Image (cartoon, rainbow over all chains, first blue to last red):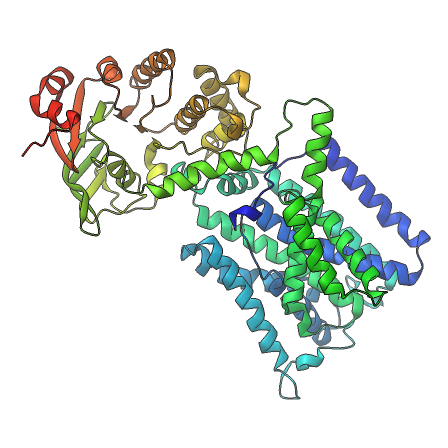
Length: 363
Length: 239
């Protein structure tokens, strides 16, 4: 588990980097509709939704140090919350809010037992993985007319078709077309990025990173790691829920496959490939991997899942920090910056006090 | 007499059949400086872990200014005003020196005040030149200073230092002793050390631990002249 947590670059990139990312984001937001056809734009929309999903995982894992193997549980809950609420309401604005809130409430409950129960990191991975499998099986077995919430049939493994799209708040008849959905998804991605960047800059965010760096030290300074981890986990769940809402809108459809292991594994691959401990890394990782999946889907030589597996293993073995930290370290070395930390050094130095502290509890 | 700053009554910590700390009674007054010595495995660090809430004692009571803190969470005890530099440096490796000290200074204080504390502490411990360095890249001695700075920035009323001079050069040891005397003008300290020279430099009262028990508690000269203490340090059987 520890070996995966390799890249631990400094939490805050420069302000210049932040502004660059936001400007590029806005340029894409406004520019892509005139470049792409409707089909291409839909493709980009799902990329943006997956990038938001990746951000949620990248935030809780890369900054909070919480290894959640079942982030798709929150994606799915968000998607289902939106679908069910949208079918029951005329205005879908409330459904969007529920898509964010329901996963947050669920994460608060689950997280409370995990963090306040002092569950170790490895078991948090196991529990979250199990939870998403349970949700998959639960929703999978809701076929038939008796399973419905209000006017929304849950549909079991067939999922929920014809989910109404997001409408302009207050005007149920003004529903988003594919271009409108692109603006919503890409806009949400930019806002999530800005939001998380802001969170990490606050005192709360700094303590979250400090706890990832050294939980014992944070505790000895008077911070309660359980509370900070819980809040981090809940924020991540809300963002994943938003991604789920957009994902549902993209296909006007949701099925239990959002809860399955492929989804959970994919988001981990996004983050690993892009770079743990960065925000832009998971976004780029999600887009790159999604693009790869699209490419792989267009040919019949190699199984797409096999390809994903190869990519994952290649990255873990060859570029364990992910692309963005490697580029950053390379760039700052080129600039001769004193701050260019070789990520590998930090790991070895980091591993030492932990392991030796655990070896001599009696001292 | 007023309520002592720290009071441990009959504190015992058993790991399986081994008593790492056995029936320890320990009283520390406000702004007192106490040295804790004893051979390896005497239970000094375990005692510190009990005081800071990292371990819950099997038996006994710990009071901080009269308040029972036995088995309270470490963050609760820290908030009451207890800071500790652990034996193995516990620092924020991925953060810079300034960021790490800022985390310690920042709890429940205004941003301005926190910044002021960080600047003062770094100046005091001569860390200003390396303020922007990631702590993980520093040498062992520097990491010790960073951890001491972190504890000071927390502004606790009681500071526990577990082997603060370990791995330091002679010059650094001198600086540490000066620093401890300076801290002691306002704050109480308990210092665990093996370096007798260092102990002589700072100590007034010394408590000797052996096999989890308090062997003797007296002035530094009386303790160092005690034949039993010598036997303990030379490893001779005392019974």
